[in-house]
Image 1 (cartoon, one colour):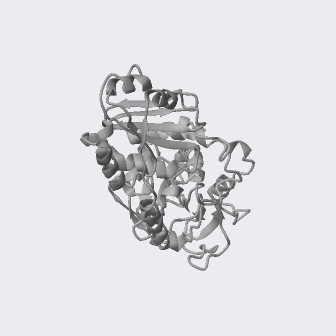
Image 2: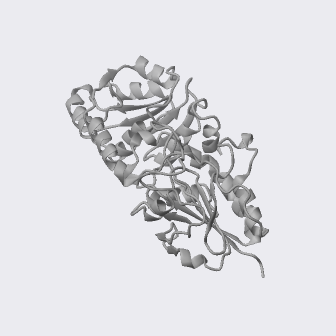
Image 3: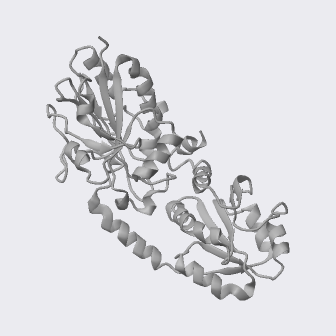
Length: 386
């Protein structure tokens, strides 16, 4: 009979922006890491397929590996391809894979989303799994975090490998380097191969390095962040045709997301929250959001009312003359329609994304991420360029 192995994957995450990756300690006073020889914690968690996945569903699998993954952590993102390769390489050996997302999305600050298109809700997990073609089940533990607590998962990725009796035989990292080109030791593969061959795991523990788990205790930090955002000043500046020509050339050295809108445009107002959240996510990086109102100058009070309601502390501009068509042509001679109009421009003016009408915010964010600075996390823009 073909040997079947269960690999349950969960990648715990934090974010590089606003937070340092965590080197997992051997113990944690709040949620101790599961010790060697401990039994596998039970679980019954919702998956992106709409089903409840239970530990007992995989009772016929001789081995069980549990890891922790989320959407927003750049370290976790860089391991997604390696995890998919594990699935491909071990599927014919009877290995089954399950990923578990451990974070409470309400505990993730906007400033911690500087390297992602989405956060960590179940609906956003579905988006990531479809976008990256996950070839394994993806489960959500953000509601109670009980499974994450039982394992003591501190960072991502963090691997827990159990034998046929569901006793812990390996715990730690997938391999020895976040950057795949630097990998020299395949710890998780070595542990799997040893147990598949009926041998003990030579190294039962390795340190796990990655982003910290977003426990419910961090929700208050997120709420405090939102209060600070709401207290930020909101201003608007009148612009000329020359100003708009310069804006289109983008001499700022940053990636710009520019949105043209109007107070009377329903779709424009509907897009405001997603655009402002994008600004709050990426503003610690080489990025800026420019909101340009196409209202007439004497409608400034109405423009300010909308901006204040949206807590729009991004850079806000307004057409400074009644000649709307001249200002429109000054920015882009080929822009021959109305609002909303959204464009993402690289330094120097190269167009990365453009949409006449309602924008695809995920496509815009992915275009931004693929073109932001590489030096803060070498290799990360390439993840989004694929």
